[in-house]
Structures are given as structure tokens and as C-alpha cells.
Length: 305
Image 1 (cartoon, rainbow, N blue to C red):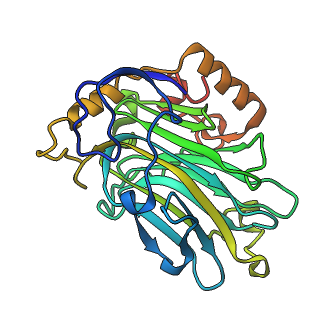
Image 2: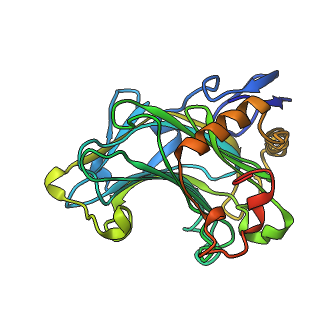
């Protein structure tokens, strides 16, 4: 994907360093980061394994003893994140693999979240991709969408990316925008706006993930292994309260540059519309039994529009 950003002076406390330039922002053009540079183990420590000496790729696994996960060392306020994932194959019912941002540890009752969730399935069927977001603890107003993917995510690595600015959230799969959320005033605090950590996990979601909980994890197929690579973390380091660090004079500039994004190009919108016509399985915007009046962003230049 390409969206124009005018860079100023990127001598920054940030995960990646970009020289002064004017450029089209592309997930493939940014430097990648190693696990040791950017992440720490979160849980299931012995289930988080490096796949190479440099820590550029890592696998996390679920078995009967534990799930596992990792988290970014820093918190970020408005960012672009990307990683390539290869999901477990064969029977994976009940298994949930994630790549998401959250500040639930710091904000117990009013957390923000932006999610990629991969929901396992019974043998012979593909994984389901789910996206969701919360702002200020708005968990009673789920904004889930689910999609079929146009490829088998167990056969090779594919890129999953999140662009998060003060006014937009865009989810990309292999550079194809699959969902756009545009902030509108009527959303109030439902739009994520506090600093968040980037996380990746694998865990047992037997109670809901597959068939509404009818299909459980079958541990005779364990271990279930998810592989991550090509990490990109482009954003301003902020403290957990959501305030930019005073020592970092250019954090505001990075946020301003990200905020120059003002919607998809015509080509990108065409790709997204084509994807959604063919692959959208469920959207809260279309669920009148759940929301008789659609939530305000549904007709705001993203989502179902």
C-alpha cells in the first residue's frame, strides 16, 4: 500500500530510523526489526522460539500445557505495524492466533484495542480472519468483521498490517486494504486514542472461536505453531498514559506525518471493495438484529460504504 508522508527530521526515539525525504509509505520499504530489538516474551516463555540466529523470525505454540505470546518493549501512540504470519495447518478448531494492539494492562476498565484475530477451523477448512476494535472500554459495542482469505495462510507467510492515526484505522492483508474505520465525532471515546502495546499470542478459544464454541481444541493435533517474521514497528514511543515522551522532540512530527493520511487512493479502494464483495462473511454494520441503528462510523467513508 502507498500513502504519502512528508518526512522532516527523523532523529527519533523510534523503532525504525527513516532519513529525511518525501516518499510513498510502503510496508515493503521500511526496515524490519528483530525480536530482541523490539519485543519481550509475554507468557509461555519456552513456547516462544527463535527460528534464526538473528531473531528476525519467531514461532509461538499452543499445547495442552500452555499457550504463548510476546509483546513490544515500547508503547506507541499512532503507528504503522506490520508482520508476516504463517498459521498452523490441519485441524485447528478452537485455536486463536492474534496480532493486535492493546493497553488493557494499563487501563483495566477503559482500554483500547485494535485486533487481527485468526480463528481456527476443522480439518479441510480454512482459517477465518476477524478484525475488531475497542476504544475507552467500549467492549459492549463490538465492531467485529470476519473474512475468508483468498489464499491458504498455512502454506506460506503473508503480511498483516495496521495503520492507526488520530482519525483512521486501516487493516491490510498483503498490501490489500480489507477494512477502513474513519473516526467520526459520534463515536466519542469508542475510537482508540491512548498509547498501546503491540502483542502476538496463541491460545485456546474453545468456548467461542469455531462454530460458536461447538468445535473445541483437540490436543491430539498439538502442538499448534504460528510463525511470525518481517516485523515493522513505525511509530512514536509514548508512555502508557498516552502522553508523548518529553525527551523525544519529534514524536509530534511523526504523528503529524501519519495523520497526513486522508483515505485510500482510488486504486486501493477498488482493491478493498473487490475483497469485501468476495470475502466478507460478517460485518457488525450489516447486523440489524444486533444494531438496529448502525453504529455511526458505518456510513462515514469506511466500513460498509
